[in-house]
Image (cartoon, rainbow, N blue to C red):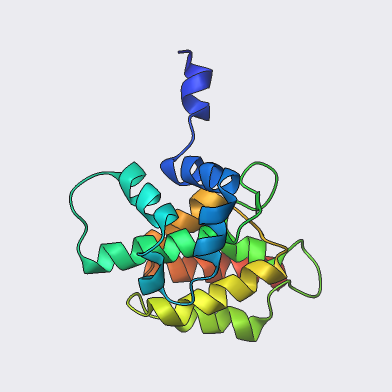
Length: 164
């Protein structure tokens, strides 16, 4: 395998997301979930859990993975290659007077603390709909996995650099 091929190797998030796009039933099942607990009963979630491997996840990690599975099931187009690499920038949209996601809704997402999975879920799904289901899959998954003050600050910087 050449160095170029190694660089193009997809993340487990993107690999799983692409597989999910091919399995319409599993994708629909995840899209119907209104809580992260419901996702744990879906085969698409368990496929992701298996792909991520590692040790047995604790409850917080399991719920985080479930949130990611449901949110990514709503993404139609991965913008990692041709669009903003950050969710903050993607929510702002192209440099224009009016952002895709309003300032009020954006701040509502940023206010949700790490443990509030069921509060964050509908907000993220709503935002993805506003963004025409386009998002940077790998970056979104990584950000949701590490959700906390650092990620929220970075989203804010990326968003307001484009909006202001």
